[in-house]
Length: 477
Ligand code: NAP
Image (cartoon, rainbow, N blue to C red; front, side):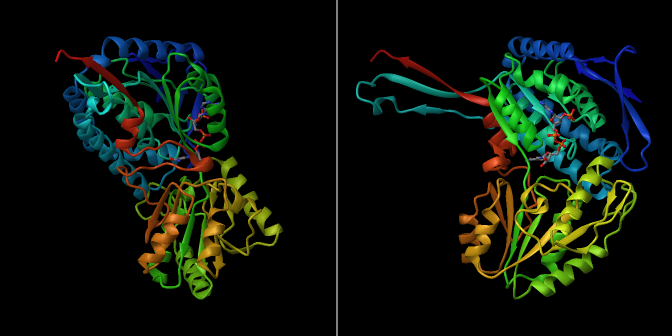
C-alpha cells in the first residue's frame, strides 16, 4: 500500500516523491509507504481551501452540511471494522480500545450533524441604549474560513474528527495535517468524506512532517484558525508562530486521581487500572498520579498491584489483549529511562518496569517525589504513581502542584466533599467517581495552565470555528 496527500480530491503520490515507511508497532512489519507532502503542496492545499471556502462552502446551506455529516457517520458505521483494523495495525492499539475509538468517532460526526441546524443567533434589544430606538440588531454566527487541523497519533480518527466535523458544521474548509505515524486512518477518513459527498477542496489532506508542512500551515496568512492536539513543546511553538489567527491547543497532562477513605477499593482499582494502562497510557488524560487516603493506602496498593499483574500483554489484534506495544521503540526506551531515573532517586517499582522490545510492562511506582519526571512531567506511557495523603487540603494542593491541568478524578461517597474538591482543583474538567481518563465527546474538554487553550467537545468546537457577526439596521419609525 502506498498513499499520499489529497488536495482537491486528487492524490499526490508520484513515484518521484520522497517516502517514509509506515511500520506496525506490533511485529515491526512495513504496512504502507507514505509519499510525503512538501511546503509547495501545503501552499496549494491552503490556496484550494481558501478558494473553495469563498466559492462553495460559504454558500452551502446548513441542511446540506448536516446531510453530508450524517451520511459520513452512517458510512463509517458500515465500515467500522476496517477502520478498527487500521488503528490496531498502524497505532498498535488493542482491539477493545480501537473499537471504542470508532464508536466515539461515529458519535462525534452525528453530534456535529445534529448541531448544524441549531447554530442560532440573537436579536438584541437595541432600544436598551439611549437613542437606540427604531434600530434592529442581529447577531449571527459566521464561519471563520480555512481551519488548519494538526493531530497526534494516539487517537488518529477521533481526535481528527473533533476538529474536522465541527469545522464542516460551522461552514469552514480544512487543511488536515495528521501525525506521520498514523497516516492511513487519516487517508481513509478523507476518502470517506469524499464518498459521502463533501465537495473537493473542503477537506484537503497534507501528509508531511511537522517541520515541512506543519510549521508553514501554522504561519500561513490565509489560514484563519489552527486547531492543534499534541505535545506541549509543539503547542508552545505554534502559539509563538501562529500570528493573527485563532488558536486552540489541546496539550498534555499528568492527571491526578484522588481516592478518599470511603471509596470502594476494589471497584476504584478496577477503574484506575483502565485509567492508567489503557493503550499503554498513551492518552493525554491517563491517570498518572493516584493519591490515596493513608488509612486505605496499603489495601489499595495491594489490590492495584494484583489487578495490574492480571492484565494480558500481547498482540493488539487479539480480543483479550489489554497491553500492546508503545508507538515506537524510542518512546518505550524513554519511558523506561524515566522509571529507572525515579528508582535511582529513591522510588520503588511496586510492579512492572520491564521492557521487552517496545512493550513496557504496566508499572506502578511508590515512594515518589514531586521533582521526579514520572510526577512532574507527562509520562505518556503505562506508568502510574500511588501516593498516600492525610488531609483534603494537602491533597488538593499536591494535585494542583503541576504546570498541567486537563482532567482529574475524585472518588468519594461524600457529595459535599466531592463538590468542594472539584471546585478547588485548578483543572479544566473534574470527574466525580469516574477516572480522569474518561471522556465523552459532547462535554467541554480542554485544559488550563499549560494543558492548553480553548475547548473541544462538538458544540464548543463549533463555536470556536465560527465568529459572531453583528448586523444593525436603522428603521423608519
Ligand atoms: P506531537 O509530537 O506534538 O505531534 C502532534 C502533531 O504535531 C503531529 O501531527 C506532528 O507532526 C505535528 N508537529 C510536529 N512539529 C510541528 C511543528 N513545528 N509545527 C506544526 N506541527 C508540528 O504529539 P504526538 O506525539 O503525536 O502525541 C502525543 C501528545 O499529544 C501528548 O503530549 C499528548 O498529551 C497530546 N495529546 C493531547 C490531547 C488533548 O486532547 N489534550 C489528546 C491526545 C494527545 P509529525 O507527526 O510529523 O511529527
